[in-house]
Image (cartoon, rainbow, N blue to C red; front, top):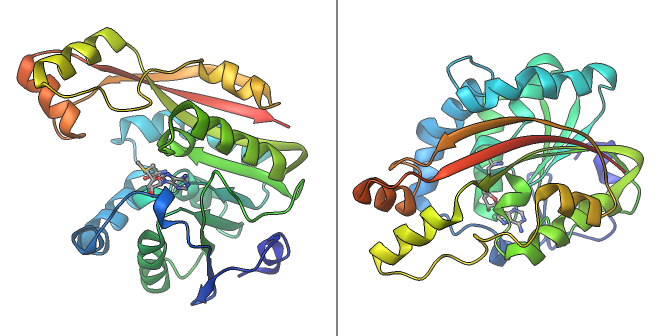
Length: 266
Ligand SMILES: C[S@@+](CC[C@H](N)C(=O)[O-])C[C@H]1O[C@@H](n2cnc3c(N)ncnc32)[C@H](O)[C@@H]1O
């Protein structure tokens, strides 16, 4: 763990493995298993990493220059939350600033262990620290970080509106005054279409799909100043995304998904 991040933790990890900190947060993360690990290490990590800064990835490349503009102004260490199998905005940022120190985090310990294996073999040139903890309960000191990044990270917390608010309050707490959150988050654009699909499917709607407030309202509620929110990307859920995409495709119903880039300040 680089000194920059080591000095910013506020409690001891339960375990340290290969220099990475583990805080016992698996209950909050996704339930990945050995099959996922095989897929990650045999192509998914590499594909996602390479794709993040290639023009053919519509979604990430659409926001590529906006993310880097923030780092051009202030190339600072950053912490990625809920990094997932794509490691969020990290590949984009390191493509231009390979020497920046970063801390990629996710609640799922298996994912973090797999990323360590991959990084030690294939991404040795970068300073990527790893830690496993929940975005809703960060073991990080108050007012200690300059930059936090999230690519569908806050959206991925699995406790509905309250989970998102808890994660945003945590991010706000750990950022120093004037610190920045770059977040690309998503929302469903047509909840009626989703209700229709679940009805035809004969299943109850998944928890947390209907938002109580907009992202803008959530950020403001947690104390952030919204600096930029004018860039969005729209696409329809497809059958390869998840079970809901499969069902929507089966019944010929289109479910829209909107991604928005937010640049936020404490
Ligand atoms: C769909 S991915 C998010 C996208 C990801 N940033 C990427 O680039 O691939 C979902 C990830 O969020 C993680 N996650 C879910 N809830 C979390 C939480 N409360 N804290 C931290 N990570 C969480 C999961 O373990 C999973 O790895």
